[in-house]
Length: 54
Image 1: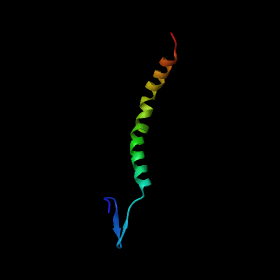
Image 2: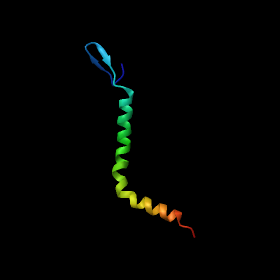
Image 3: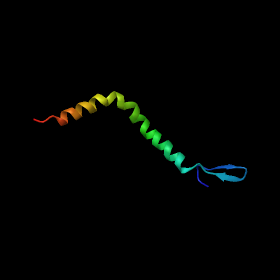
Image 4: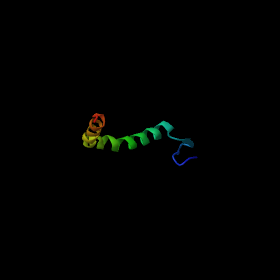
């Protein structure tokens, strides 16, 4: 059995792959979501500077 499987009453129960994928997605997105409000002004400034010609 895999490392994530648990044995309950003789049956091996493994968590669904979607659970692991969702956990990894949340752990990846969470730091970005926390930092974005503090860094938003730099993104907006960069967009404005890039759109101005000459």
